Each structure stands twice: as structure tokens, then as C-alpha cells.
Length: 117
Image (tube, rainbow, N blue to C red; front, top):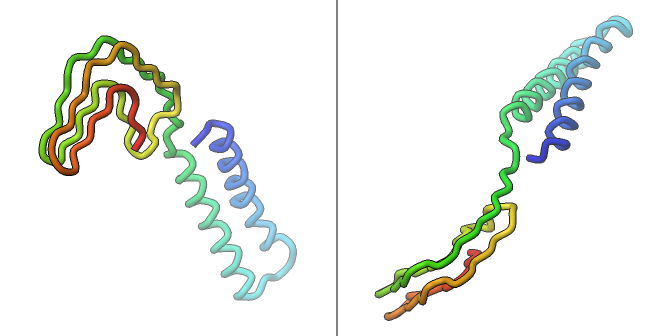
């Protein structure tokens, strides 16, 4: 989660938590209002705790150069550069002078450079 969003969520959660006592200060609440205020406070606390523990998005700049040979056989995968599974990594990726990647056999794959899966 980006830092700006984290701060916004935490501020919003704090507003929800602080606004809860207003239900009690505005008159004599009935059971439904007390239940709603309690749920609102709980949701605010859960959101605040969740936002607090979110890790900042890591932005990695990946560089690979002058790699050796790689060979995949019988369903394997050979990558002589950078592999970013499931689109992970928010930074740039650069591969130069990568070695040859060879795939032999059914369902084998080879990448000499950058692979986004």
C-alpha cells in the first residue's frame, strides 16, 4: 500500500473511531443506535489496525548482466535474466548481455531477458 493511501485510511479510521461517542452525546440513544455505534467503532479500530500493519510497496530496480547459459528439460523453465512472477516488483527491470536459454521437451520454456508471468 502506498504511503499516501495508508495515511488516508488511518485518518479515516481515526475519524470513524472519534465520531462514535457523538451518538451518545446527542441524546439518549436506543438499543439500535448503541449497536450501530459499537459496530462503527469496531470497524474503525479494525481498519486502523489493518492500515497500521500494511507494508509499503517495495519498488525494486532489477538489473542483470552477463549471465551464463540456462537449459530447461521436460517441462522446466530456464531464465537467464529477470523473472517477476505474478507481476511483482514495481521498479524498472533491465537485462543486458544475457546468456542463451534453451528449452527442450514438452511444456519447457526458456527466456533470455525479462519474464513477467
